[in-house]
Image (cartoon, rainbow, N blue to C red; front, side, top):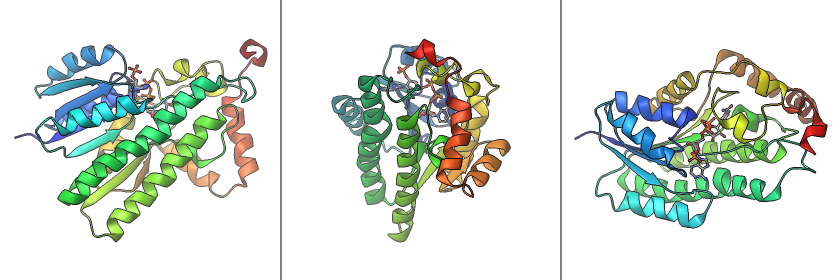
Amino acid sequence: MNQLALITGASSGIGLELAKIFAKNGYDLIVNSENDEIFEAGEALRGLGVEVTEIQADLSTLEGAESLFDQVQNFGRTIDVVALNAGVGVGGEFISTNWDEELRMMNLNIVNTAFLAKKFVKGFSARDEGKLLITSSIAGELPGPYYAIYAATKAFLQSFSQALHYEMKDMGRNVTITALQPGATETEFFARGHMLDTPAGEAAKADPAIVAQDGFDALMAGKDSVVSGLKNKIQTAAGKLMSEQMGAANHAKQLKPNNLEKHH
Ligand SMILES: NC(=O)c1ccc[n+]([C@@H]2O[C@H](COP(=O)([O-])OP(=O)(O)OC[C@H]3O[C@@H](n4cnc5c(N)ncnc54)[C@H](OP(=O)(O)O)[C@@H]3O)[C@@H](O)[C@H]2O)c1
């Protein structure tokens, strides 16, 4: 029987590419997203010759996250890999951004990612086997003016993933947690987070298929973390040598809306 992978946020972008790579490597899939597009993605993934089950759930709510976990638990098969990838951004000046959107983002990117990690890693730990991928970001490495809360959600995920990776190793468990750190990637992320009208939004971006492959390879190798792309690796390494305010200034150059008036 094939191994089984769960991928959240698998209807588009990096998550959909991750799902394709898992399928090509012979994994059966459970794919999740919030909207109906997950069924289109599921249909396309079935074309790759593996079993695919769609679970539609809004992971910005506790009910959605609980429902996803319960359905996976009741699926009747061992889950080998979990990729907690669903996430959104919210760009703009902090004084003008919408709090409800930011709260949803924090619940999705932070609270329910940690909740699902707790549920699944408990099972992995008891079985002494399992791999968890968390889609973090290079944005979490430095303070991120003009998407301040988003960058902070990714700083949380990066710290959390690294800590959990260490904890599992320290406890002698055959369980690995891998943080995937993409840079700007050509997905729906920038449009959805109102960030198209920024230097980063307008610049050329990485191919999500390459980003997903980097994540898959690091996950399979049991690495703690991977920065996708040479330019991003250099930028991240350089960032670690800067003061936080210098890093914030560099980050702001990329994410500051071109025309702030439009965002008021
Ligand atoms: N693109 C970048 O530049 C970039 C860089 C670094 C990190 N990342 C991270 O990469 C991850 C994937 O994003 P992406 O770039 O591939 O963007 P994307 O194309 O917008 O994909 C986001 C995925 O998450 C799902 N999702 C959003 N809200 C959800 C919710 N409440 N419940 C369940 N699923 C939800 C979306 O499904 P629905 O459409 O159904 O909501 C979609 O499948 C995110 O964690 C993001 O922070 C992206």
